[in-house]
Image 1 (tube, rainbow, N blue to C red):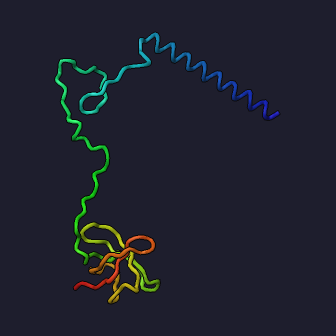
Image 2 (cartoon, rainbow, N blue to C red):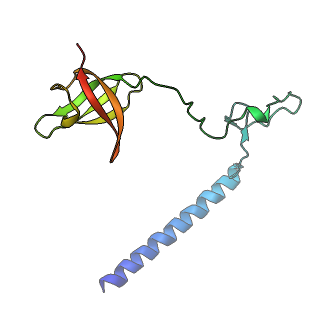
Length: 144
């Protein structure tokens, strides 16, 4: 019995929404409000309700200057010895991360790659090597 009561209530609500919608539509029609208005796009990419001026000169764009994709990185020879700051280093577990000073990229460093003990926020010099999970710092030295 609870299901039939719930069904009746849902049906009443649906009928009320339908009636309210019809009343709103009738009211809009009486007031003269159009339900669909045209929107135009100006030369700056903004939406406006006014149509563009056909007498205005249009800008000419050279299609060869348009870049559709992200420009490729140029191959730049970087110094093999880089400098950076130790972001985090856990001496117990034997690993950490170094942020490169120039590129702001983060590199993994393992304790076996250290020439002297390091701690967080130390300035170090290091080299980059390919590791099993990506780039890693090797030959890490403390800079004084």
